Length: 114
Length: 112
Image: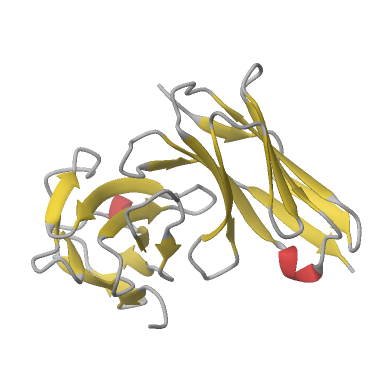
């Protein structure tokens, strides 16, 4: 396994369009996280899955944002009716439940809304 | 609300010298404090963490110090190398399920 994989790496979309990003975590990791990062800032927590259960979604930025992890493996993050303010890097991370805080991040999907 | 912040946005260090990156936090209930390194175009990379009941932890060339009295966290990098050039984030984990709050980052520049 080569680590957390995100697709696409870059996405340019017109305002009002829907976009969907995919994350493939490290295969043995049961925890998966989505973060958003804007330029010069640290990643901002959005949501968290343990296996297929979404245990925390209160930080999703609006009802336009949704995430799924249907089989407890890969996850998707969808943004509906994109706005220019949604332009950011969307990061996925995974970890194994246990006594460590170490999470492994993907390289992110950079979204540009024009 | 809770926040994690950094004292300096940019730190320039001569190659071979030691680096110290500082961070202030406000949430006393955090279980862990974590340092991440982020190189340009990449996702953050875990460096080291420290549990809230500890005051020091050492890794390979790195040491993290936690001072709960003044709510201060620091990352010391020994013999800084060009490959250490990156943005460093301190973060806190208070969610039990590893919900991590990141600060805004310090950029470390290593001068050859």
